Each structure stands twice: as structure tokens, then as C-alpha cells.
Image 1 (spheres, rainbow, N blue to C red):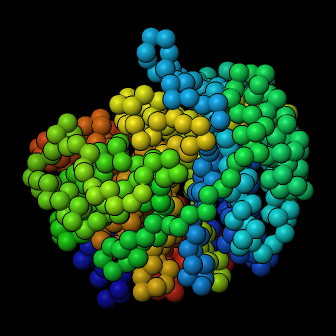
Image 2: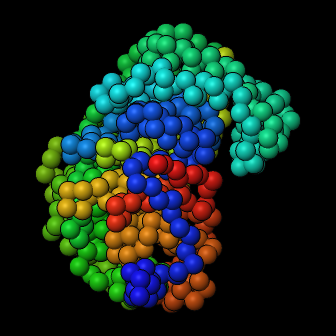
Length: 553
Ligand code: GLY
């Protein structure tokens, strides 16, 4: 009997599961197909994983404007073939003129200004972050990595998924801003599949970035135009803010789970603490013995998610402004306390689960791609405009959309943001602060060797989505594609609801309701893109919920 049959019988993994893409040397998994192909071409020409990441990120800024960006920010997690790991934090920062109450109206209610329009944006970090990673680890000339995206910006055939996405975002957002309307909606007429989509201003901006790097974006012609339009339209970002932008090079967070080393996102992401806390609460419980997708297993994982998200609301923020008690939140004793508070039979009430008291020992739309190069360097990169198409604003003459990342701050402590996430004082708006993120680029090792590169877009659902795919691989023995395809669920403490994807069986949902969970449906819990190293192969899995591509050689 083949190994696959045995594993399938033992774990009840369906044999009809989709296969991943398998390659021996190198792999890119990204959310848009042309971007994946560009990353593969860079590595075929001798570039490393960081070179490929720079080229893929610029390509996504052209072909996947929903989330790919120049006007947003993100995180790049790198593990080199020599075993060194670095976290490049190019998250947006609040403008210098930002104030704590800037999104509270005269009636005391939170306005929509953090979501839509010129005042919704933080200072973008993407160009700076890609440049910083490339300066330290790139091997191919910068301009050669921007070149493919310039070509794409001069015109590429519209995909079905992009034309559909633009059409659905039009009434809500894109049509509200004349420049955005002109570029993405062809002056109000929708692009059809295979129409050639030309972004001439973006091509010119990319050409300047290819030539001058971040000097253009943060101090040069792009910066001057950007700041002038901000001033004209009542936005807050100034030339000074752009000049002051810095990528933070941080030490990744590390932890372990069942003999695996987890390398993941530190604050200002809550993602790394999230997966380490959730998995920590599960370790040793045997929760997985009832099988993947069983109500009993889902219940325990959901309770762990609930407890982490209660902590997230109070203890996490930009570490340059707030002392995040990372080691307290991840200490064995504290996690044991959280684990012991889980009732295996009955759902807790979120109102009764308060943020914990860890030792203070120390000071939507988003996109993700995973890359492994032939030497074994690995990159997990998640970057974002926050909401789909960000704030809806395209800076006239520059051709790129701006983020609405200011909504990731706590505009009014105790009130929910776009993702329904309730946050506290720690994450209030302060000038030059980075908003708390959920982005969770993660790399997993087994015996010091690469095992998995993973991450996802999906707002507050990123952490729970990434955690489930990791658990599906490490605890339920699934291959990467099955691990991604399996229906997912999400609990974020408040609102007190267990959100499940529609593919979850009615039987399971009934059993969860019987345990006291209020179950609601959700279209997706994140869009996970992952590579797993198995039996000498790189297995690339893309999310069936999106339109990405895994490819390599
Ligand atoms: N904007 C989504 C996040 O960073 O969590």
C-alpha cells in the first residue's frame, strides 16, 4: 500500500484532494498569475528570493491593484540559506499631523474618514521596505526588478477576476474619486476580460522608482506631487512625513510547536503572538484526535482564538510607542492558564473572557506571497492597502491607490473598526506610530531545515486562517493544498460569534451550536498562499478562494 493511501486512511484525508504544484528547486506562490511568473523568471535568471520578492511586489502593484501597492505597506520575513532571519517592517506610519481624536465627529461618533478618502492614509512604506531588503540581500540590479512591472503598466490584458473585482468595487468606492474613476473604470465604462488595461501614470512613476529608488518616492518628483495633492485635497501627509519614513528592521518572533521552530511576525503585528498563543494553548491537549473538521476540534481551536483576540484588544500595538509584553503573553505559565480556562464541552461567553494579565517583563485587503529560491532562501511577504482598493484615492499624475490603514488604529477605544475588531488605548492614534496589524508572514523549520513558508491577506482573519493551515499540516498531516482548501472558521472574541465558511458541514455546525457557539456564515477566512517542503519537493498551494498561481522549476 502506498504511503499516501496509508496517510489518507489514518487521517481520513480525501484522496480526491487537489494536488499542489511540485517543483524541486524554487517556488513562488502569489495571488496573481503574471506576478508569480515574473518571480519565477527572476530566479531562473539567477536572482535570489529577495530579488524575486521585489519583482513580484512591484508586479502585483500593477496587476492586482486590489491590494498590491506602492501606496501601502507591509512586512517581509526573510530566512536566508545560512539560517539568519530578518523582519522588514514597512508598515505605514501615521502622519505627523495625526491626532488621537481625528476620526471622532462632533456627535462623538466615529466617522468614515479613516476608511475612505484623502484623510484615511498612513505614510506608505512599500517602496522603502522593498529597497531596504534589496540593499541588504538583493543580488540583481534594482532597475531590472522594477522593469517587468513597467512593461505591465504600459498594458496587459484584463483578467476576468480583476474586471469583476473592479466592477463590484465601483459603486462603493472607485467611482467616488475622479482620478480613480478615470483609470480603473475607463471614465465610467467597465473593463471586460481581455481588454488591454493601460496605466500610463503608474508606468511613469515606476520608471522613476526604477531609476532613483526611494529617493524619488520619498523626496523627489513623486514625493512633491504626492504632498501637493494631499494639501490640495485636505489630506495630512506632508513632504516632511515622506522624507522621514523609515523601514524598521526587526528581529522576528520565534517559538516552537511540537518540535517545529516557528519564525513569525513581531509587533506591530499581532499575528506572530496570535499564532504562537493559539498553538500554545492547543499543544498537549490532543484536540486533534477527534479529526480534522470535527466539532470537538473546532470548538477547542475557536476558544483559543477567542482568548488570543481578547489579549490583542489590550496588549498589542506599535512597540516603538507601547511596551508590548511579548514574553509575558507567550510565557508557558500564562499560556497554561489560558489553556486551563477552556471548557472542552461548552463555549465561553466573550463578555466573561477579559484580556489577561501577562507579566510585564519587557519594555481586507491585503495580499501575501511565499517564495523559496534554489539556495533555500525563503521569503514570506504580506503587504496591503488595508481595505480592497484602500482609501479609493488615486493621486493624480502618479497612478497608484492610497491605503486606508489609519482604520487599523483604535479610532475610539472600545469601538469596532472595519473588521469588527475592538481595540483599546494601546493602539490609539499618535503621530508617526504604526497601526497594529494582523499580517502574519511565517516560516516554519523542522530540525533546522525549511518546512513551510506561509501567510495570507484577510484583515483580522489572517491570524486564524494562517493558524488553521499550519495546524492542518502539522497536526492533521494534510498536504499543503488540502490544508488550504479545507473549510475554515474564525473567532475574534468580539463580536461573540463563531464565523464559519459555507462549506462547513451542517452536522458540524449543529454540534457547535449545541456547545453554545453562536454560529454565523462568512465568505472566507483569509486567502492563504503556502509552500511546504516534503520528501525533497517544494509543494506550492494556492487558495481556491482566490485566483493565484504556484509555479517554479
Ligand atoms: N490591514 C490589515 C492588517 O494589517 O492587519
